[in-house]
Image 1 (cartoon, one colour):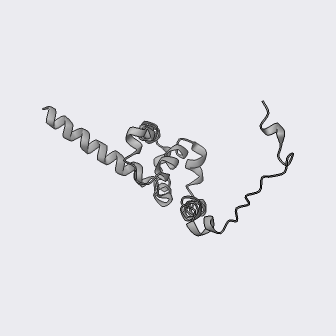
Image 2: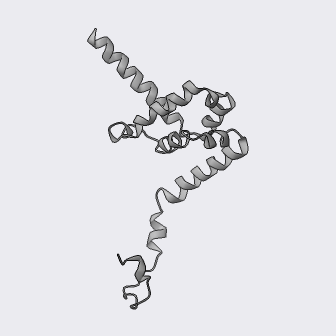
Length: 133
């Protein structure tokens, strides 16, 4: 009997992980919105329940970190409404692409091309109020 529970828990873990990872795809979110899932209170509660995937002991299994970002965004009705249209979904997809392309792993070339000035900045060239307590 205990082995059956272990198998059920393993299966549930796999299914929930797969679903959470699907949330990284803006077009899948659009599909869910088009199918009216975001209008169902039970589905919204399920999305709240899935927040446990953000804890480190679970997040380490998530391959697509944007899934956790979108899981957070789906907690807000404004985002659920926003992702309903194709135009907005395209914009989210475009922003996601640019994040992956340019922000996630800045290219080594761009780091190497930046000149380094070894001379210290002259005194009084920064805002003293930013560092004073």
